[in-house]
Image (cartoon, rainbow, N blue to C red; front, side):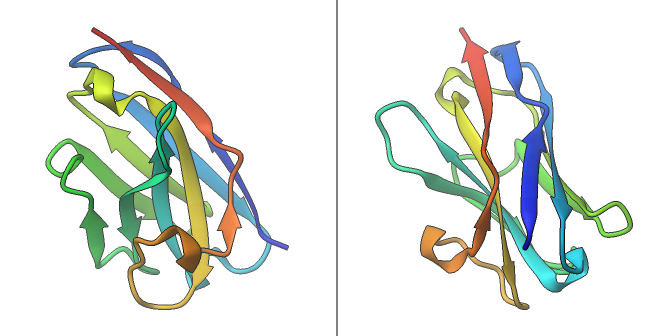
Length: 124
């Protein structure tokens, strides 16, 4: 069984930065494509970023492109989301997700494993 645990959320002022981490236990981390999603109050969960097994291919949602950076450390079984120049509209619960395979994924239904989420709140 694969378990994902997010950390690093918190309260930050607009323009600030946060770095989210997602620690993965279970089967070989390097077999998984990883993604970050977010869900704002009253809205549906949406894609933010994904990274392939060795970090050579990355995809971002337009809303975060140029401000967020996804990365992974396969030796530490961890995926990161560096978030810079945060805006109030980035306020959401952020989830990491995993799926075995090679191709980048940006749809919720394509991921098999999910973390419990970490709250990010950006004040204006």
